[in-house]
Image 1 (cartoon, rainbow, N blue to C red):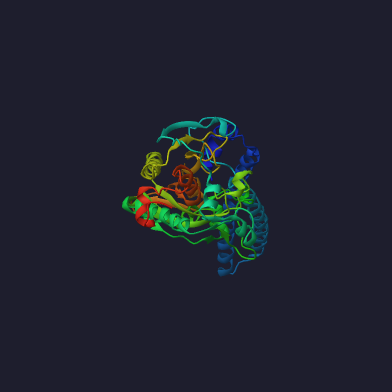
Image 2 (cartoon, one colour):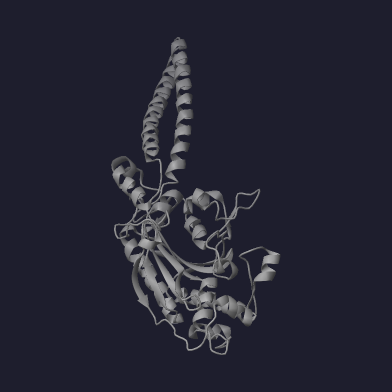
Length: 420
């Protein structure tokens, strides 16, 4: 949700953002509703004051034994007018909130302008892309030959884009989670295992709900949604709270399964474990002071890069263009890992600064002194590891000539082996 002052005082900034994002939005209606909303607030406040004055006049006249008929008639008229205005105000506020909650975030000036991912900019690369003197396989063929994944029986049990992990891959999956949590724990993040379901208010505070209707799983008959990432639950964790400025930044490491409908790409993506409906993820989530959020954004990215460097997985960092940017984010970096079996870089991490966009929706503020005016915090999120996609990178990049998989060194102590 954007600052209403921007809507009132600098609507041209919002028009530019919508153009840059290639988003169609009825901004004029939102501006008109905002003006009408402000007008009704003033009118209803004036009528309430008038109602109070008339009420005191009635009480005074009755106490003095005077005729209060005309004052009572005036009270009835004011009350009727106020009720009509309050009803109109309720309708206008509802329409305003619907539009205000669906408008995208502003775009940071460093974001490249473009219609889609073709305008994304490469920031840097790290690591040497592996070369092989033998014919290599992709993760689907590797997992089948080593009996690590059963896709056919998962389809029978649950449907497409589900999987059974088997044997050593189960332990390798868990080792990624353990390593990620130990890694962030050492960096003084607060470890969090959130609820795996949250209510509509919390979900709408974290995302633009109508854009995710085809992505998020709804629990029938209940006000609950399965989380697509721990970000959604952690964002709502401090809703309607005033945080202490001295405690910022607050850095959380969320670990949870993630549930997504993942309409996504087709072809081999449908058959493997790269694009699936359920996976484990360890997420960074930070509440920061506004003046520190951009520094925190770069810090989060550096944490991600250090993690994948320890795993020795080659990657590149991409700065997303305005047309490829998620609507709640002002700026996003993707980290794309090299997948040897696909001979391509594929996205495995998204690192975003949402500014005060989520905080305004969730009413999360901070202050430094008791009597000081509150400010909205900035919220930031970044994947550290989404396990299935990282498993794909490990299987494809660390495959051996004899058909096995070398285990990255940081994971060997968790797995108890150097080879699968």
